[in-house]
Length: 463
Image (cartoon, rainbow, N blue to C red; front, side, top):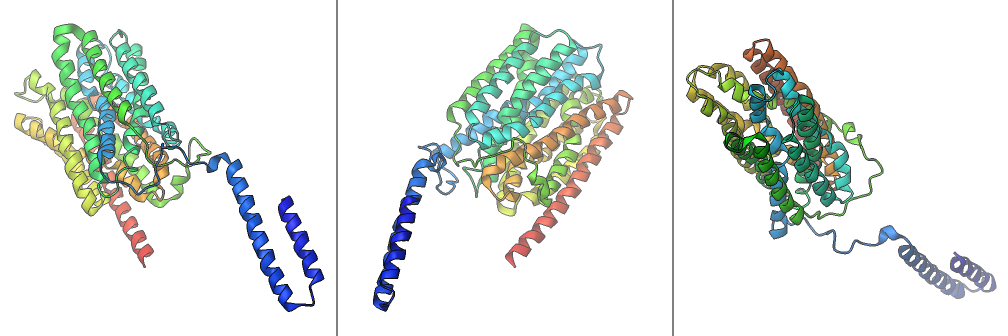
């Protein structure tokens, strides 16, 4: 400021002394402009030196274009795969515990009561993303993976010691759910910064971890529990979770510099029509989406001609269908867009939920139905990230937006599975199946509406 004031005073005196000469006036004006420019540059340089926020991070982030491939990018897919395995993979596998608890440790509890353990697990997984999303956006994925992974492993270890309902609820439901929510947001939010043209396929491959978890964890438990008992069967699962989480922790890396976020919970996304529609879709669809995953084993045990061993494998078959359901739709989504694929697959999943009513007396029918429902229900979760990325103007706030949309999904899970259990408790498998079908059908209709709104908006922007 002193340099600027001195310059101004000097130039004013010079103009007064040479006001009669046009040539001198022009030279004075040029001199003033030069002095002012030097003063501004000096002031800006001083500001840059004294403003800590202006310093660039040293090697942590990159402002280069999205690589859309390469070793480091595909390592993030591996990291996401492991995190999906230990978040939604655990929720998907809960059906094996639902069946075991009902027949053994918690036989005095109702189906609906037992389902609350898995329901609160899924709810907290999704609910925690509201708070974990902004933490991710601030550049702390390693913190989320470390703390979330610890809670998942610790909660599973504590489950192996449980004897009473409230103990299972706190350990397997609350503790595991809180940890899974922290690692899940990293799984979904890390990839948009590394992939653009192949974003959907990268997300689909990572999301296969949820399907693999739904296959591996039930089989591990089912095979080991009769041999080494419930406690050690669960502990083996915990050791698998620990090892795979450490792999993710070793390779996860955030590429883009996060912007400052003054708010932990940011509701500004609900001011946008597309985001609001998608949040409603997540809420409505998730009420029915996981009903088969929770109850397919019990339902299959009542199918005529289906033995107990094969009835158990309906859950792994259903989950294995999710592998195809996450990769093939992802490939199509990269070519035609996420919303058309999401609308089609959700519509088919809704139709399959209604067809579930027809396979009660057919062994082959229940096997085929389980496989196809797994295929067409998978994209509802795996396409969430590319859909949010497609309607979010700034990739640096994807974490927060995913947190809010996943919270809406959490509310649906919290409501849907207990309602389905209560309907079934009154002796009505058909009522439960109709409930699942109706919620998915409404979600499919809303997805079509969202697709039309987005097409109109894109056309308006082009014109």
